[in-house]
Length: 85
Image (cartoon, rainbow, N blue to C red; front, side, top):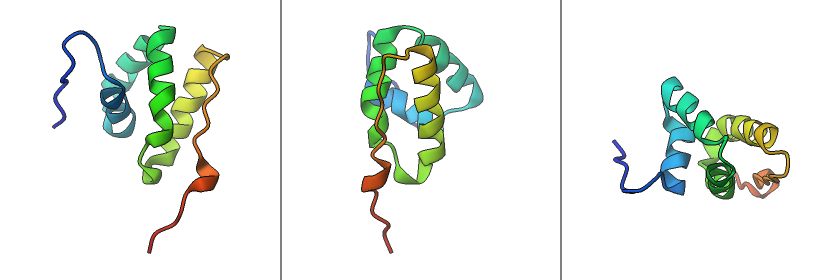
């Protein structure tokens, strides 16, 4: 369990946690929050730090954020990923 530690609003890490491990309901809520450009920028800024094994969800959110706000440019650093043994 990852309790929300922010008292005023969501933190970037709590948003990333929803992207990586959230329920459908949490994703729907996050999508609505991302209509606000400030929230979308916050998520876009931390999205490249996602768990490399959860790339599909990061790609989906990259697409969703850029559809909502075309001015957002999100580089997921896919070419910099090193494969572990």
